[in-house]
Image 1: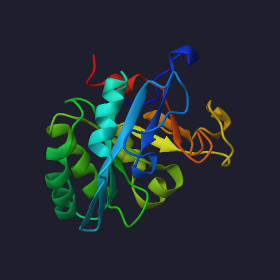
Image 2: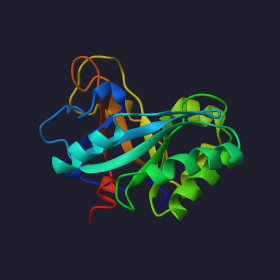
Image 3: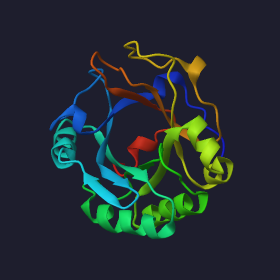
Image 4: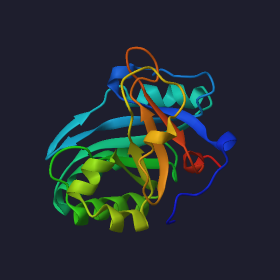
Length: 207
């Protein structure tokens, strides 16, 4: 996996990612949303903050026929912190083997070696590891080019906070190995993250 796979526009499926702010059963931006990525919890340099909404969000999204995946808000710097985070959260993952377990790396002082190590541990546990973040933060804090050679990226970039239900690709954060593009944080009024799967990665675990 190196360059962004070319997928015709009509194959690109949209979906949402959720945290506790979307409540126990989540919310959708469009009736044809196909996937959900739900936050299992956060790790803040040794402090765990589980999301009480995770299990009900996963159950409701599976019942609605969505492809459901997991992400961890991951603020960590060392391999030891990566181990602590994953020893705690991986046994609690309720989405299927091969489904996405993404690391949301958008704060703190991440370290390239520790992030690579954590993504490898997710893979070894039988899930699809994905690195999420904003391109500017990830390129500023990590050797993103080396990480993208091994791991799929889910990058966020949006022009404003106007409600939008389709991606504006003029703001696409071009990089190698981008599989999912978070194109808005206002997929609906009041706030909701909208994403587009560019390669079919969100089918992992369900085919």
